[in-house]
Length: 162
Length: 268
Image 1 (cartoon, chains in turn green, cyan):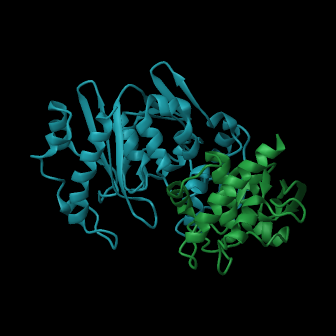
Image 2 (cartoon, chains in turn red, purple; image 1 turned 120 degrees about the horizontal axis):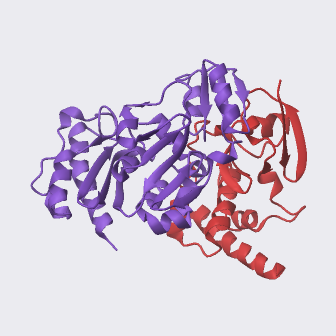
C-alpha cells in the first residue's frame, strides 16, 4: 500500500493508505481526528471542510494521496490550547448551531472567508460565501451573526498581535 | 469507493509516459467531478493519474495579446487573478460563479473543459472568447474542441496543458443557476471582437454547449440587447427538459440570459 505523509495541525504524520482513501477518511480513521464530519459525501454540504495549504476544501472530494507533503488544518487545530479560536468563541457566544453536525465545516469555511476577504464582512457577503455549507437546523441566522462577530474578533486579534 | 491504483507524476513527461503505459487510467485534475463520479461508479478507471504535483501545468501569464492559463489553474485563481480581472473581468466573474468557494479552490479549468459537462460554465465562455486549447500533442480552437455532451476532441492519452485566451474582446457570461447544484440551468456567454460576435449557450442544449447563430447575426449588426428583440429563441425541441426546468422554460431563459450578457459586455 502506498504511504502518504503530510502535516496535520502542525504535526508530521504518515500512514499507509489505499489509492481510494479520501482525505476525510485519512483524518478520521487514520488520525482519529473525528471533528471533520462526513455529511453528504457528495461535496454538497461542507461538513468536511478543512484547510489544505491555506485553502478551504472539501475533504470528502480529495484523495489522501493527493495531499502528499501538504499542510492540513482541521477543526482540532484552530484553538490555542484550551483557548478557543475567536471564530469558535463567536459560534458559542451567538449560538451559531443547534445539533452541531455542520459546525466544524462552518467554522473552517468562516476562517477561510476571513483569510480571503478580510475581517469586515457584510451579512450579504457571508450568506453568499456560505453556499458550500449546509445547515439543516438553524436557518443560518445565528451562523451569519457568529461569523460576522468572529471575523471582527479575528481583526482585533491581529491588531493586538502587532 | 472501489479500489484503484494511484499515480502522482511530478512532471508532464512522467504524466505522458504513465498515460501511455496505463490503458484504462483517468486523469485527475481537481477531482470535483471525477471523484463524485467514481463514487457513484459512473466512471470506474483502474488507475488515476493525479496532475496536482505537476507545477508546469499551473499558473496564469499574459503573453502579448493573450492570457495563457495553465490547465491545473483553479477556478479561485482565475476568479481572483489580477491579470484576468484587468484583461477579461467577465472571465474572472465566470470562474467566481462556479460551484462554491471550496469547490473553486480545487476545481480546474483543464478538468472542467475535459469533462465538457453540458451545464458547465467554461465551455460557453471559452467558445465565446475564441480560446485555443493546447494539449501535449496539439493546439485546437475551442470550436473544434467541444464536440458534444461530455465529449471533446481529446484522444486517448491526450492531456490538456493550457488554454490560450485572446484579450481585447467585449465579453460577459450570464448564468441562471440551479440553486442546489449551482450548475447552469442556462448560461449564455457573449464575446465580441471586432465585428465578430459569438453567443454560446450552456446548460440548455441536448448535445452540450452550442452557438446561437441568429443572435450572433443580429448582434453583429448592432451590439445591443435590443437587437435580440425580433429574434426567436432556440427551439425547445433541441433543448433539455428535466426536473429542474422544461425545455420551453430553458428556451425562454436563453433569451433573458443573452440580453443580460450583452448588457454586461457593453457595461464599463
